[in-house]
Image (tube, rainbow, N blue to C red; front, side):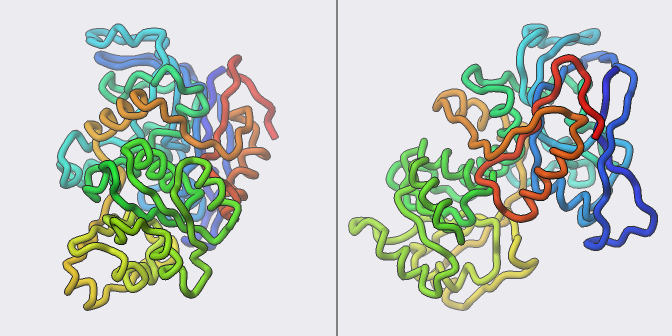
Length: 363
């Protein structure tokens, strides 16, 4: 029988103090309605958002909708009036959000925007055997991707694409880009995209092993942000004929501006998609005088998702996977993935491959 993976509610849980358990439930197999597709999910992936949800540090949490925003599956049934009948029996990537069509500025109506997975705003979530989606909420999966690689792409790929391509303006051959916090899914997506564009990519991490792995993926160099002088070390790595950064793609925040302002070209861009260090960051007068632009950036639109998937297909980019476990009902192993994420051990995405027969151990 089909299953969904949901949060288990705990009474009186306070944000940051509670940690909601996950549970597997049997549900009836859904049927697609007009202009809808039924997708059999093959693989899903975790994001930091899922960890925040379990800690009740995310808005509009649902305890009935399935977890997870990332998913790869196969279209197994088409509802009435579907126009994309060519997708039947084909693998697809699911859009990880709802309510953002194409505006480069942001969702057309922010009140209707939502990331899927454990959300009261939308019932959609990929942590289930079958999902019914509107036919325009999927893109054909690039043929070179495995189910796990496909599941690892949507949310981080879209976030990274918008941060780099839409916001930074630095996705061109020969540009110099700093990507901070390498090892996380978005940072790795930005690294892979920028390398494919022909940019010179430099990375930062507190783990020397992650820096070396990033170099193997095409980074020109890396610095350890635990060093008090990492900005000087980065300056020494930049090419002599272009000794400055065109853009910084950052998900950490903290004292980023004061560290990078001397490295950025006049009018350089800081594209900020997160603040894991602190909900606040520095902004110094020197950045104002240098005409540096700080641009906030979130996930992205359906149009950006379509463009990103097409680029991945063209360049044969394969998302980096840190670890894969099997079984939607393998609660113990899924909890271990969450622990790895919380401890920051991963280099790449954490993936769950679903059971082909729709059953798995209940641990």
